[in-house]
Image (cartoon, rainbow, N blue to C red):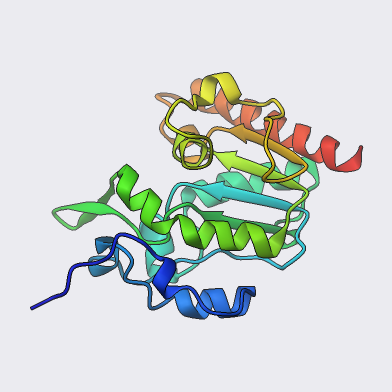
Length: 211
């Protein structure tokens, strides 16, 4: 008989908070039920002391298989925008609010499902620990789920997008769309407009880091 998860990752955190220890401990996290169907934990990637930290929603199908965040189609959109604004991907820290892929199976495809609040809350100790260790100068929230996880249920991406947000999480905090929204645009013209707006949001982050 399988034991019920505590819906809290806290018991799985290591005693010493450093990125290596956190990554190793996260591999065995059973804080909520999402680990049961996922291939593996997908922890954040980057160095302690990274000046910019990006937080998305959760790993997707490709990330779940490879064990790295933002390596699928949305990750390519992010990488392209970072390159255009002069931010090197290997100099930022990239993670997700939820560390396991939540999905439903449709034939051979695994379709992303938005995590519920209790699943987000269960996983938050990992993100809080990452913030404590990395201590970014700029924190960029990618999409509504990341925003609501850190700012509460009243957070609206349309209202928050592209402007500095009042927060103790980092000296500069802002939000933009999740790059997967670019891929969901209905046609080429809409995708181009979304891509340009997303890149401009990241350009504002780059300017803030120079100022």
